[in-house]
Image 1 (cartoon, rainbow, N blue to C red):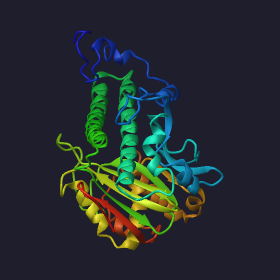
Image 2: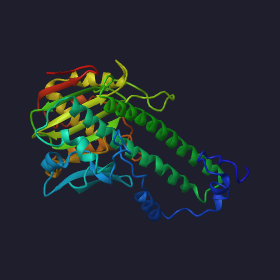
Image 3: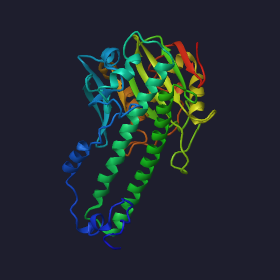
Image 4: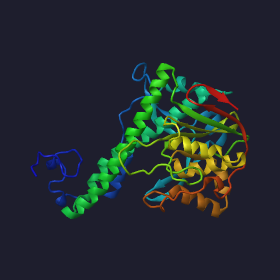
Length: 367
């Protein structure tokens, strides 16, 4: 292979600056590599549908509103995050000024765009459902872009290995790269649909449901995820097979006017995986929904905030079960096995649903 040819590892780099003589290269020092991962930054861009028009300085934007959201979960100004660090799940206190933030919006757009869901009292309507979904999607798209950028750094970790070992390692990295690119495509496609809806004022194709629980739950989250199975564990879509787009759901569990609101939003086909997931949630008894929504956060959401005393006061067996659910499917955790969230243990809440808001893609209807 000539030095100017594209490298066999699919990095997109010339062989001469990639794997040529890689077996003689020095493996990056672990601490230096970890620091490089932490310092990795993306181009600072605003996710507002009109960006870059009218943009200002990129800021650390909250996915869960600071006032009336994180502030009512916090103790001594902090919430708890469960972060995976070097294969170990760690309990980390986060101040509400930085918890749940990402560099996804500018100072000109962040406040104005999300004012309807941050300034109380807040009505539960189509605007709220759309904005919460948009913010969850923007966060997940930003986090996915960071994960994709890390793949390039991971490619360096076969330095000093012989060719056979390099090939085996790079096959694993290629699988990560392909998965990241497919996820990026699905997130971007959904973002483009929501952008167009916002700009046109035509929300046909947007579907969402919000459930307002009768009390304040002790956690919050925001993000998009692939529904692989429904609430009862019935398979919906098989990730990693084929190259067709997969359907996504935007989920938010957030304090709302002193109580807790749970929303699910999607743009997929009628009777598709996303809609079937939502139907399975709706079919739960009202006193099962809060518990399922809380367990779903441990299972599907990276961006999860907890009230510190609630987490610390859980029985050790309950914390262990929730930690195992959070670790499932990670590199150092057990395989993710579809289960029945409707009867998930431990029971974390039986708060009934007080109000529901639905948007069917045509006209909002409430109940």
